[in-house]
Structure formats: C-alpha cells, structure tokens
Image (cartoon, rainbow, N blue to C red):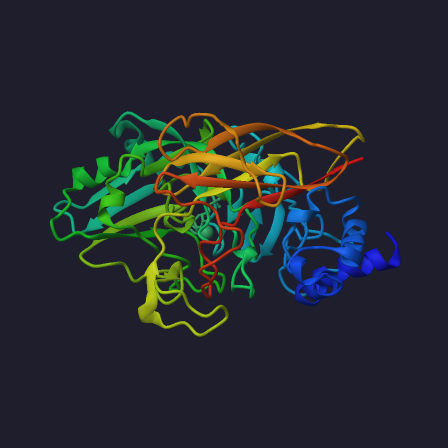
Length: 450
Ligand SMILES: Nc1nc2c(c(=O)[nH]1)N[C@H]1C(S)=C(S)[C@@H](COP(=O)(O)O)O[C@H]1N2
Ligand SMILES: [Mo]
C-alpha cells in the first residue's frame, strides 16, 4: 500500500467521520452530494484495492467492508498488524476469536459458521463466571424444581434421561449481545460481531415434561435459573447470572433440558452435564451447569434481569445517553439475522471471473425466516437466495446463491434476511441501548476481482 492509501485506511480505523469527510465531503458537486466522486473515489478505490464497480450507488458514510474492522479490540486498541486474538482452548478451533479472557468469551467468525450444523469445536463460548469442575459421574448430577409447584422435584441426570423419550432438535443458540460491535457509540460489553451464535443438535427432554410432573401452580408466571458456576471474585454467595423466562416459554415444547450436543455428552465448556436451551431467546436464558429452576409468582429479579441488563429501550433513546429504567423492557425474541459464511470477507478472484457462488445462514428469534436477499450494488438492486428448509422450529435456514459480476473490480455483497413478521435487517444498527442488544445490521463482505 502507498502512503496515501495507508492514511485512508488508518483514518477509517481511527476516525471514520473525519475519513468520510475527507473522502466524500470534498470534491463533490451538489448533484452528487452524499455519493462518492472525483478525487475521493480515486483514493477510496486505491484503499480498497480496485475500481469500485457500483461506485455510483455507494453512499457517503459507508466504511467499505474491506476497511471495516472485523473485531474491535477488547481494551486498548491493538496495533493494526496484530489482528484479532485467536483462541487456544482444548478441543476448540484455533480460529475462534477471543473477546474476553476472564470470564472466557470467544466468538465464531462468520466464515467458520459454514457447516449446516455447527460442530462443537467451532461453537462460541460465553462464560460469566468460572465453570465448575466436571463431576466424575455425570449421571449423578442433581436438578431441583421448586417454587410455585405442587410437588417439588429433585432428580438426577440418570433418572431424567429415563423420564421421557429424548428429543433432538437442531436449534440456534445466540448471545443476547450478538452484533453489539456494530453500535455507535460503542455499547458496554463483549464486542461481538455476528459470531455469538451457532446452530447445534441439542438432545434432552422438554422442560415442560418435568414442570408438569411437579405440578405448575396457577400463580407461576416466571422461571428463575440457578447453576453451579462460581462468581469471578470467588465469593460463593455472589450470583454469576440468574435469568428466567415467562412460564409460557418454559412450557414450549422446544425448551429443553439438554445433556447432549451434536450427538455427544454435553461438554463442560457448554454447560455439561446439564443445561437449558430456550431457543429464540437471548442465550443467557439457556442456563449452563443447571442445578435448580424455581418457579416464581412474579418476574424474576436475579443477576442479569434488572436495569439495562438484557433489557432494551421501549421508546428510542439518545445513543450514548442516560438510561431511564422505566423505558426498558426485557429482551425476549432475538432479531432476524443473516450472514455470509462463504466466501470470507476480503475474498479475491482471478481477473475475468464473472460468477460468484455464496453460502450463508439466516435465523430469527420467535418468527421464522421467510427470505434472504443479496445486493452487490450497495442496495440498489436485490436478488433472492435459495433457502433450504429448516429441520425443525428454531433451526436456522442455510442459503445459497450465484451472483453475476459484470466486470473486474471491487464489490461488496450485502445480505438481508426478512422474517415472518415482515421485519428485515437494517443497514446500520439502530435502537441503541447502553448494553448493546439487538444489533442486526446486514452482513457484508468485500470481494475483489482481478
Ligand atoms: N450458568 C451459566 N449459564 C450460562 C452462562 C453463564 O455464564 N453461566 N452464560 C449464558 C450466556 S450469556 C450465553 S450467551 C450462553 C452461552 O452458551 P455457550 O457458552 O454454550 O455458547 O450461556 C448462558 N448460560
Ligand atoms: Mo450471552
């Protein structure tokens, strides 16, 4: 890269607004204001490595995918050359990206989510505390159901497995903060891109089976989950996390007590021997190392239930502004999202290539995914992808597409999913909230031909 190109690149990384003014703001006549032109276009083309084929549609304010940072560094900005920190954890893919070490948090970059079923070694990790030691006899693990029930239950995992026929469903588990890094200004918490999600086969029995056996009282409105992990401080009395769901969600047939993942006993890192899966809801409700569920006669108030924790603004708030508690509601259904899993951002094709094959995935919380469309011209035109059917409710939908490339140069491919409630992914993360939930802007990749 030349010095000038380097400068644009650095400027976008450091101060996108100024970079934008430099590239878009000057040298543009009134009729083209807001679009790239003249010297700005030349500089931008140099920075991205080729002629921007659909430059006429490129909006001002857009940091090209080729220059956009993949992963924001957790604390102090890392030198540009060092890149994201890779995970070193037994049994895990070394290309998972570490977002935090204490507690351990690691995400799966989009290109690693290219399997129909996410293999366990590629599945994201999100701890809030210190995981408990794995017991030597998994089947002796105990679970208690109490609170607003007629007959509290204490049951071992061994007994649980014999209680009802096991079900296996392929379902998305997604962290409530997935997409957080797309918010401006930066929201508090792990800076997930789109990789706080995965779609695995979960085996267990419906939570409803056990709750019915305990006899759910009329007064029960909400669950509260407890597990065996330890607070980072080591203080046994402090709660790591304790969330819950409305009773109707707990009684849903896809809410499972899970002991196996992808056909193998659930690993310690994913909450083994026993965890909950509440598909479609923030991952934090899917309690790991589960020891107790207490039914409550009011909404739960445990760790992670109050203030701006897993709660979003009802009326839009000023980005970066102060939160008014009364304007917040619990985040329940996760928003619709699609990702391009192949090729990877920054893909290069030989000069003269006129076709690009793509693969990806799309999912949504409670609604279903209805369509996924792609654009190579900054959203001016869209074309549909071929969507595979989900195996069961809460499964993701894999998609494929072949796009025509009219000439050599720089392209961005954008993906946009639409769900059964008619909602689509926005261009940029909206509905800012202090802890950054619900960011689901379109995913995009840069592709360079020649
Ligand atoms: N006991 C316990 N359960 C937990 C957590 C935790 O820290 N402790 N983290 C939650 C969060 S925030 C998420 S996103 C998922 C992550 O599950 P995974 O690590 O298996 O991917 O587990 C949830 N269950
Ligand atoms: Mo999470």
